[in-house]
Length: 89
Image 1 (cartoon, rainbow, N blue to C red):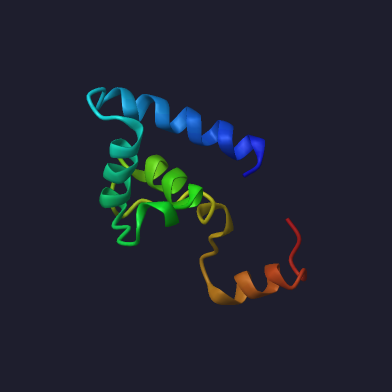
Image 2 (image 1 turned 135 degrees about the horizontal axis):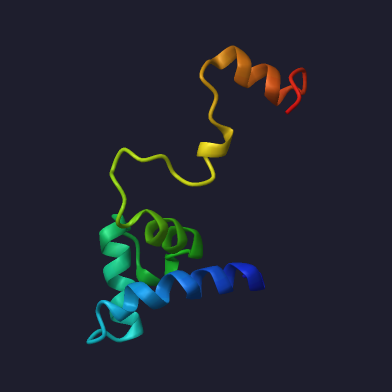
């Protein structure tokens, strides 16, 4: 795990974990995995799942995922031309 990802994960975990101070870290991670719909064993839980779940946890279910929103295009043709470099930003 890269240092910036670790820092991002810690900054997201701290305020969320403070809302459940009675849980130890493993219990809290299990709670996050359950909320995210992660059904595999806890040791397979990735930092990506935790980061995106913590970012999207208290948002509307229809809100766009951060990171995907920046690549959104109104129509397929524009998206394809931009991906091929025909349209520059």
